[in-house]
Length: 308
Image (cartoon, rainbow, N blue to C red; front, side):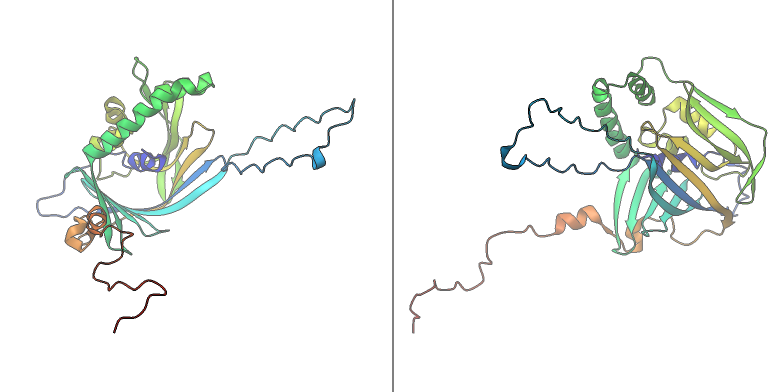
């Protein structure tokens, strides 16, 4: 699972709160958020070293110049995106305000849809499929752990990937300080996994509709025991920083929070909204062929005489 999806999972830390009265529609929680990723810049391509002109060799006794030690790249901002998130009792809709793409999660159906409103297409994945792909990726990473020379980093990744025989222990540290974030009174919260910081942030007392442990466990983001502890936290994560193994970090910041009435169709199956399945569209496209259309009249070869 990507760090952004992990942050989105943690955004749902809360109890569901009191059930609405019969026939009463519960308001949708609406969040405006920014997710910023800091990390190492991409490595520039190294130009080929020029060959000595005319095959010249250094003069006798001349010291060979040693290559300068490259400066260690500094951590910088890699990306930043803004989102509008609408959360209901067992479903969530996230709209990226930068590219317009929409992600809808339906915990009651065990499905996730990623929609492209511009092209009216969508992709669908079941929770089981996401979990399977994530487990395969986790196993590949575990097999590559011995290749990591940094023993401390290797040990940390082993704990995070659940490759140790001993299960990781999650400790939640809540502070008493109060700070305003987007108009909400918040208290500090630090989560540590086997003593190492998993994230730190500011938690408001606002109840969140979505408190499905299955969502927190999606794609193996958190093991069952840890997901249950996180799901038991009361409140809404308004700000958070997630350290990355490479020294970078992911920052989540809430700009606004409020409630609104549900909008018709906002959590519906995209097929019901006229969207086309991207997988089905690709399958229905005719295969490209290098052969010319047989219905086209063949042309006579160059230089041949025309027939009457």
